[in-house]
Image (cartoon, rainbow, N blue to C red):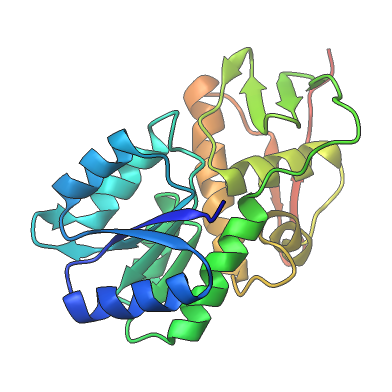
Length: 234
């Protein structure tokens, strides 16, 4: 069954180009011109990924991204932001809000298709050879099969990238992980993300851990080297 995508884009010419390009790749694309219509479609249909414009007639697309990342049903749905705002600050804001990728306009349709397929490929669940029990380490409880994490008994609302970053740090607790290693673990070998992407996601992870435990300071920065996670004993 082809993957279903929702494109939220108010420019008809751009929408036609994206739909034509992705349908040639065997993907199924629904289109919304407005945020209101996109919200209605998300209630009625399960989508495998979203392509989200920022400047829309009835609001900012990043508002919808923020809502998705706070909704249990959609918090792990891959989202690619497609925006005319391509400055670093715009990209960082999109990533901080939970976007999986960010493409600035004008863009190459072939590159966009490759990025979307990469998102779908990395989001596909990997069936385990056997179903391991969730791994408990100190205050962390890692359910690798469900890709869920609990901290101090509370579930963490993590995006897929955030989960992979935290799980990688937890699996190698006490070791320093380079940014390149963390990029590969969370984004894959074909990622074009940068060190700044890792820094942004680590910042968000720290905030989510401190929302549960204000004294939490388990993730350490090692200047010029990377990050480590120290799991308290007991």
